[in-house]
Image (tube, rainbow, N blue to C red; front, side, top):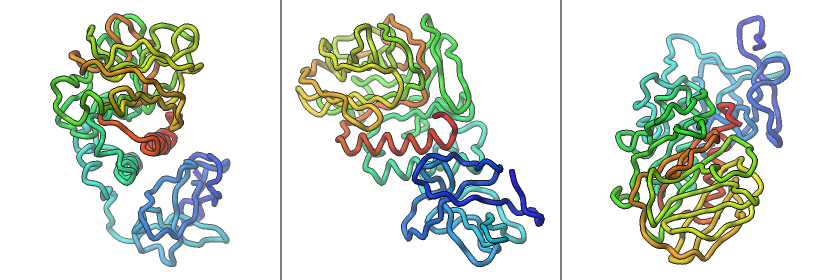
Length: 339
């Protein structure tokens, strides 16, 4: 970390056109200058900070648009340093984000609180938040925070079973034999947004594994005629997406890495997205809602060795909403160092 002689933190201005991360080569903060009148949050998609130029240090840490305030110093910019007794307590722009943080046993750091707030705000702006029944961001600071259902923290807390390995800011990794994550979310009984012909499931895998029959990032804890499953890359390089159906159809796919969404938008309409882009669609007819809870890193008797950083279930998403879902998660994942 580079400091001026007066103790102020220095910054490096970047354009934001490519990913740079938070820190420059000299240890200073990378910032992207902006004058946006609307809320954009603290974190830029390049991994640096959004910054707003002010004329005095005694103005508070953040601009109304969520950027960090910076002032001119020695032909460059430094982070504004308010004078007097100022609180470091983060002020949330989204009450839903505050509810998530309140459910953490260990309160999030100032920067993590901002990252949570930015993700929630982005999902709300894109019209995605209201369509999700349960959302787990497992790339968290600790395992307790990784199990919180962001949509309603008091319900469907994720239960690690069989000792999946947790890595801070990455997520959980299965052992391929006994470990998985049980959401407790049963599509047949949850009575939330997902219905027979209106639903999605998703998972973000950090692993790039060879084709195998156990590359199942989302599945069910038991056998059911209507299933919720994403087998990312089976032998033969194909993906098996099931949303409230018995399966049988596949899509060509050669990687297990990325954010995958299996989406049912109608009786015979199934779409699959990876990192916000379509990788195919199917006409597999729906059969019934799953009667076992949805799990991650397990499907019935198959156990995965994937590393998962987040997952969700809920109502159907449009193609633009699927892209926005990925983009919002990507900003968060990059800011915490998951990807």
